[in-house]
Image 1 (tube, rainbow, N blue to C red):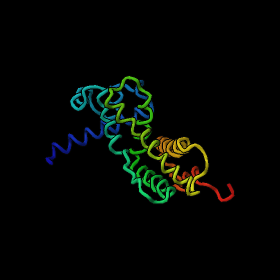
Image 2: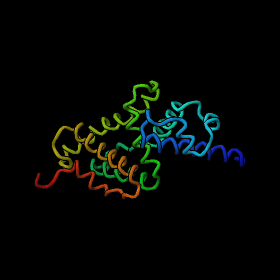
Image 3: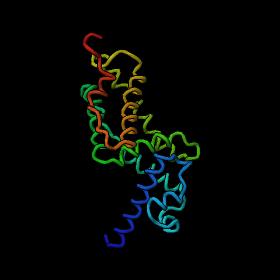
Image 4: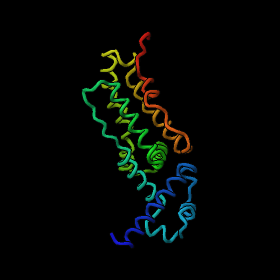
Length: 195
């Protein structure tokens, strides 16, 4: 990669990170293209050289978030609680190692509430629901094995995944806060010995 290409890529990353920070703090509607250019310390004209519009910039962030946050968890025959513990540990490791990842959780959640997104972007955002649904049979298996507490499996899946989402959102806005232990989150599902 030539020095010029490296500079272009660094500028592109700077624009994306500046926009991401503004989108999660101010929201999509309140963030103006001039704000993004100012935060990235460049002219609006230069920013438009990289992205045609605020909408295209936002969609690019969603594409990146969908790829990076798309977790291909191994839905194996392991013990169900082992699967959920590994998922929580993986997510906490990702957001601890890379603060931008925590911000992506915030962006992806808030993007789900925008009506103006294209159908292909909305499809990318539907992955979170798919993860919740894919976890239901694992919870049912854990209930049969006596590892996971009784209750509606889909509701338990929502409680687990939304707990992780909320923690990631909090850490995105408060990066000095450490991640909790994965077992604390897994305890949302775990059947207690006396219960």
